Image (cartoon, rainbow, N blue to C red; front, side, top):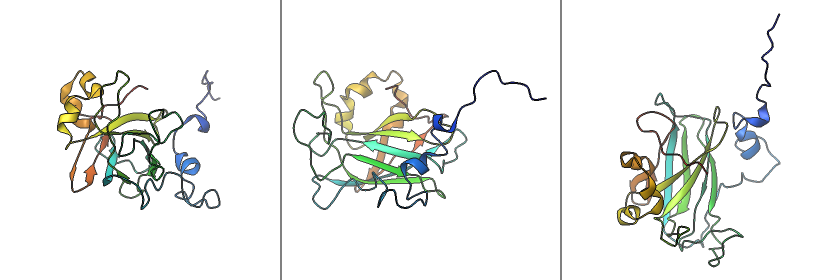
Length: 204
């Protein structure tokens, strides 16, 4: 006799994984005919204004193991600090920049990679300028609610020091978890889900 659980089990539609690739990146999941290419694959074209950069990294669990089934979405301003969004009221964003990217991690290495541009500074809700940053959303098997975090740039030290969000972080020792390192237009940003290097996540 099987004992009743007394509660409803989580259904597939309530989990962020392992089905994220089927729904969000069908071509990556070898499902053809949905989109010519997976949405969010290309953020820039040859007319996009701004400094071209590459961002790569991994999503790492508490044991130090890279997740190979994670999927990451990014959202950022263009080089002038404007968002490609109908709610952007400060001006017209670069029409040659989507501002939004989606990338599944490599199923062997766990690496993700975005070709984008360095974002401009955007005002906080009180008018102070935020440092250049990119918003990240992370899902994977076992992550039922997407995790939100931000990536800042190590070579923007002065802007980071006056960023309203970074200034709100109580435990300053954890700020490096939000800072991408790199040079020559290539930045590295690993996201740690647990452990001593646990990335700061935001409750949006």
